[in-house]
Amino acid sequence: MNSSIWRGFASDNYSGIHPEVLDAIARVNDGHQVAYGDDEVTTKLGETFRHHFGDHAQVFPVFNGTGANVVAIQAMTKSWEAVICATTAHLNVDEGGAPEKVGRLKLWTIPAGDGKLTPELIDKQAWGFGDVHRAQPAVVTITQSTELGTLYTVDEIKAITQHAHGLGMLVHLDGARISNAAAALGLGFREFTTDAGVDVVSFGGTKNGAMGSEAVVILNPDLATAIPYLRKSSMQLASKMRFVSAQLDALLTNDLWLRNASHSNSMARKLEQEVRQISGVDVVRPVQANAVFAILPSAVTERLQQRFRFYTWDQATGEVRWMCSWDTSDADVDGFVGAIREEMAAN
Image 1 (cartoon, helix red, strand yellow):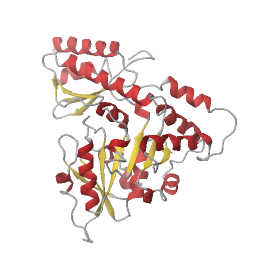
Image 2 (tube, rainbow, N blue to C red):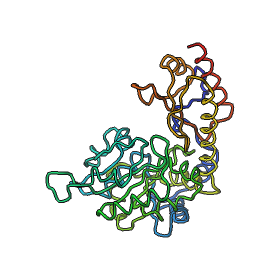
Image 3 (tube, rainbow, N blue to C red):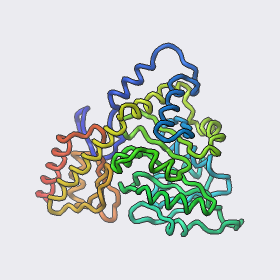
């Protein structure tokens, strides 16, 4: 990693910007456009999202995934209400307390071994309605694909939305890697969001080739009124929004989102297949999107991390996470697998 150009498997956030996204930014860098989203590019983006999510979808671009999640759940809750999520949810463990600090709400968490909630698991926290002593459960949030690299099927999401709606609750979908999920499922976005009853989606672009662009996608029109004000007060309103919108529009045009996500998923499958052949390396979770979770000796992990960047997921078990990106190459995987073999042989 002494070179200024190197590859790693730590996060799909480490990857660069796809050339087609860079070209899109450059194309809109001409003349003046009205600021704060009243520009032609953002107007076109609204049409693009309606094509993918349905006629009633409304899109609100933001800077990052934390912003998308916190703005979304604020629009879905009152100050005395709470959000139900898996213990592993990014909202719970990786937002630096932003839901509590900025959103000023309670998170009711539920252990989920595969990162996925079910109606039965939701019921572990969906209680106490009308009890003044308990933060009122108002929203269920799920992640697609999950923080553990697993996927919800359409039927699983429908079961969650029907159950939550039956309890008077709303459903939010954190789609930081929504493109990887759609590619893996062989579906468009609408099938497991709009058509499955999801109310609000946080749509991720940055991990799939954008420079820095996410969005709150409102599928339940009753929730749209608050978003413009919450986006501004949460410091997520871009003045030169055309450059944020252009990135998402590029991803959703000519199936760039699908090409990028399909490639990163395929690289993860290749990595899984190769490391399963190395004695002493245990792939511990199903590889359904672009993440591979494995356990290997701690000494091997320490030496490998001197050569490639990746994160230890669980210090207690030695589980590590390897992420593939839109620009991960066959040569990257081959080089990494070769290094794992070398370090395992030296152990």
